[in-house]
Length: 346
Image (cartoon, rainbow, N blue to C red):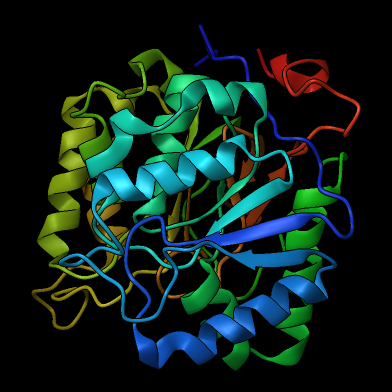
């Protein structure tokens, strides 16, 4: 389908060496045993050439129920970071179960005035979807700080970690399209074909739930989109049901392609002859919809994550097992953040 009524993208300004990146608790708390991982995350960001600061709510042992603080407190801290001109990017320390509580408290005018990269996935993918819907902000679906940069990155082969460091740095500082993301033998063609479109997605349960809020993406924004998703925990049947919701909403009839992340701790997934594989679930729900599907791509809870910038135009060739970023995620520092490339793809 040809995209219609697409939003004007709001790209953040490119970061420069020495710029300040703040790690913040945008959802879950920092448990004391993961403080060393946070320290390693700080070192990882510094190796990319940036300064790092920890936001006040990121204090080991501080929490409210399952959250770092009450939703209003998290929103207050996030809004302060959005309004602070010294802060050039915000990365979530971890995911969690809190972002739904403050969607209506985010200072979207501060985002429009000074768009900044917000990095993370899991519960943070909800922020990417909602802020994209409300402002057109490009969402940086990337690894989290503590569990990702300071966790799974540290156990990855040195060559892969260096590759990711360069990729993330280029994503934040480069004003040229990255092109093909580095593929691995794990990538699988579940249905061949080629597609180009804006990248939209996140954790599949957050995609479904976001569409039930007042901040849902308009359905026609999915026209021609490449939908990416992953899931962690729960049952294989849950994924089937989430996909059925997307089918009922007409989203699967609008997208031009699909990219599926590595599943993580899903029960009943290909464990016996009676248990379907993830590809079987996807193809079962898609039916005869002839769209390319690329599976088992490294983003999501299995980590480490390839960056999947929400809103950016991508090229997908499932048969060749390639996924390419066709636009930069940031604009030059001289831009006002809304011009230049902002209407690319319309």
